[in-house]
Image (cartoon, rainbow, N blue to C red; front, side, top):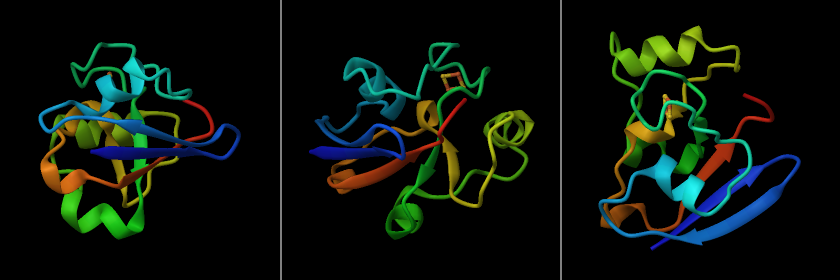
Amino acid sequence: MQIIFRQAKAGECVVTAEAGDNLMHVALANDIAGIPGDCGGQCACGTCHVYINADWVERIGSVMPGSTEEAMIFGAPVDARPNSRLACQISLTPMCDGLIVEIPEEQ
Ligand code: FES
């Protein structure tokens, strides 16, 4: 499947991923700028904050209220939005083919 990462400064990057892959690891494996993933995917750093494209929010799902992910998103210096997610908390499924992920300018 293809995943599309967009960042204002770096532009658009289309990468290949497999069902079951973790979105943050896909970004790291493809040297996507703007997703450092400092904690390695433990939901403990918030540096994999992304915005799910509006057309994909329903399919990917919103952050669970009261979850650690929500706390990390709203505790980070990055602007939190209704479509904010942590990439390390998203496991790709076959229905994610064509997913568009927007990356904050800085984190
Ligand atoms: S990589 Fe640290 S919270 Fe996602």
